[in-house]
Image 1 (cartoon, one colour):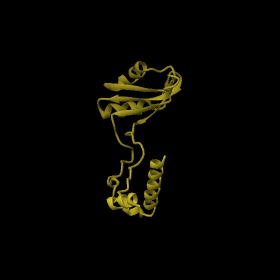
Image 2 (image 1 turned 30 degrees about the horizontal axis):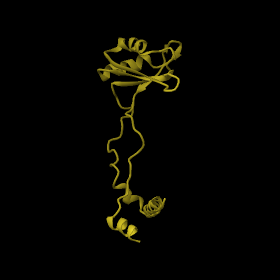
Image 3 (image 1 turned 180 degrees about the vertical axis):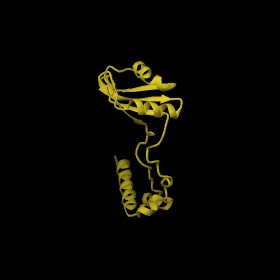
Image 4 (image 1 turned 60 degrees about the horizontal axis):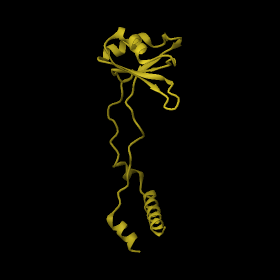
Length: 147
């Protein structure tokens, strides 16, 4: 129990010292901002995000629906991990960007199994922003434990 108390006190001291650092000093640890603005029409990709799927839709029917526009390399439908039911969206991968664009233009708003599809180019998966970790000086850690 005593060991945990020392660790808690150390953590509080470190966190309180981090609170007073300026924002500009913590920014140097994050990645620089993107210099190129995205194109106005959105980034082209060979991966389409397909929303509005019926619960009855499966990978085979989705692949058949989009194969008319080009070579479909992969189809993924997202399922709820608890119920196993479709979450109503998925991804269609094409071998060429032009095929994905023509499929998006033709299928966006069209009905499939009684439901209108909403299709856009998929964005890359991003979880949170850059992680900023304050750097501790070794002498502040040693001073804390020597008290």
